[in-house]
Length: 159
Length: 407
Image (cartoon, rainbow over all chains, first blue to last red):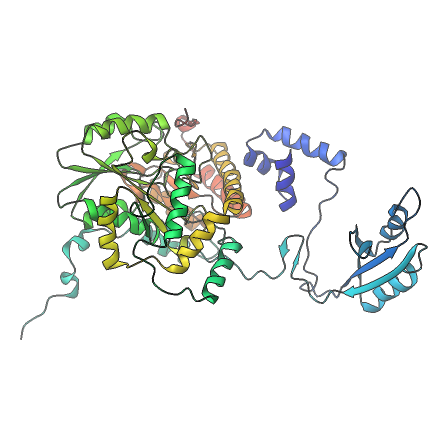
């Protein structure tokens, strides 16, 4: 099962037949396992990694360090939820160290992101402080190098 | 005026007698074909792991750009000795039983030149890697082909070896896991061969470059068998397991007399293996285990993808337990190896290597490397399936040969 997940994590477009061949399993079994994994939400979604710059689309991403006052019994979870429900928020992590939440926000431009932070995020009760860092260039995302200059350089045929 | 000879006539007749590799002609054709998917490549599709490359930048910054001793860096030889001992329980002395070479290719040439006298016979189980016979011929020896078949798992039997031994036989060359068949030899079979060898004065060159790429069963090191260490020249390197083909770095392990003899030739021809490559090899042995393991795992998945796909399209495909090649039988299409490969290239833009490039016993097969991305493999296999369907298969070839080498 783990092997199926590892394969799909790298290449979501693999067909059940390819997976079955690669792991020498019956195709029906692979199909059933994937369905199970989808149903129990081990597999959440199949996403595509896109180089938006190449597609001519302007996007701005910022990492926002958020400090919050934890609440009795539920700690950071309630504030975190209020934050991660916004569609502008792409990822949220609870961090060790000087701040509490690392929030990745995406928007059309800096103004839009700044606006979101100032009017939505910073104003949430329990949020005591924010620090916004804009991403200037993405080199690698989710294990994928965006502009990989290492291409196929092997000879076509070799002994 | 004296008419001078044509330049070609001035080339050493022994060199002239060697046919240029069957692969080369095919290479030219495949190179001219646009957008070809190549399953004809004899090297990993991975680039050398980053930590190995990075270790080399550091060494260059620190100015490691000089010769090393002829035998190679002692630290590398020590690491190699440790590795062989840990894996196979064979102990070599790093001082006089290891020689660092510019890839197994150099090691092979040295081993042959150090042992083969003019007229000596060398037994090569075929299908075989393309270098063995020419290197023997260049050394004045005579290659003797031992034909193996798919039904016998492309491994020679002790009997076959025994039958070919004459008073002139000097060497037996073994290469398992095998290029081009992917065959892995079982310990039992190797032991039987070792017994035959130990009754004679025969030496063995064991080319174990694919040893780490063993997916079925376990790799048996020839030198680990009783009585074999002293008479074996063990060749191995870093090209395949660590994706380091272009570095040209390998080693030979044998008794001090053979290593000294090989080192004599090496010191006058190569002097030493490139220091940067030696440093890379040391880094690979020290810290390369994880990245190597990852690559092996991926090769194994692609191997299964390819073998299962061939069987599904009705091409009998022997289970390749090692290396990164599948060697399906294509006789059912009614085409020869060359016809199959040429037509497949022209009609489907997929390059494979005709089996007869590896000796006459490779006729009726093609070598397909699965060292390619899953995407390319899938596309190439679909194209081959369409091709095979178009040419049709005679029904009786529709047999699956299970692995014959395990156990």
